[in-house]
Image (tube, rainbow, N blue to C red; front, top):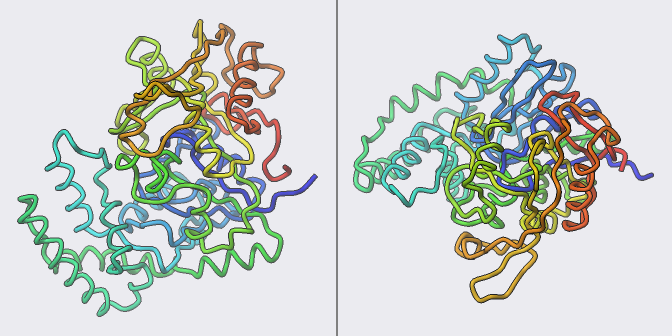
Length: 435
């Protein structure tokens, strides 16, 4: 048996697959948890002993009170959101959160002008809006690529921060006023916001890349936590209805600052059905009572935004694309219990395209995906409850057949099955750290 030292956890659909629970569950076996992309538009829900915790920026290993957690340079950081999250965890009794959290000084900061522009853009698009969370994520990544970000390490030099803020406001205020009819932002007010969080952020800055490298050299285990999902990736997703970062496994290397050969195992998190939040094509979406039932039983509302998620049948053709892009070593199927009680279950194994041809893998881009008509197989459902099942043998026969068919069609093994939101409601088939 080859031991995997470092595991990457990625969403393999359109996000909201339940990554937080699995990262929290695996964190017991590791020496550090690393977020490598995204921002506070990601909501990771953990349930331990019936108590719910929602994390947005802080890695999902933070509830393990001896574990250090890291935010890599691929993450755009809202200091206000981060500090609010720390305060929530402190109030809940989680020990030494700020002391165990290390932030790369190369992280771009989300500032008030990013939020203002994000919201103004969405408001002006009307029916054509992307469906962003309005939290400034996209504009912050734009600044990063345009080489004008205020980065976390810049907080050590407020003269540099002031210079960057003046230049950025000159650009953003023109857009706010003349393109979107929104109010401009004042330099002094933005600087006051920065001063309000500076003293608390500075002690958390650390050379995350070097620290992780040293841990890897010392044989310590690391868990790399992705946000959103593969089909929302800026390059590989249903563009333009995507997020603003690379959320595939390969991004863990760049976003955390570690060599790619250090990433030993990729765990793809997959719902037992499919959901999508916001705009964009969704071939297997259901508009009937089955879809409504999935939404109700699955509590399909965004943990950050509260937005209702669209629900549909499992899309194996879309998952095949995710497996190819990420090099998924094993899958974790979540929310199997939500499928309980459905008489017949449909499984999408491919698509018919507008020209009459067929494909067994999701095309790239929203325009191409919007022309896909699902090709379904029908499998028998099960009436027995799978809620809280802790062993594979405890699952109904038809539930096992459903999981086996997913493996056959997608071409990747199932390593873990989740049968409820609590940390303990988990079936282990193959441990990622022991694969």
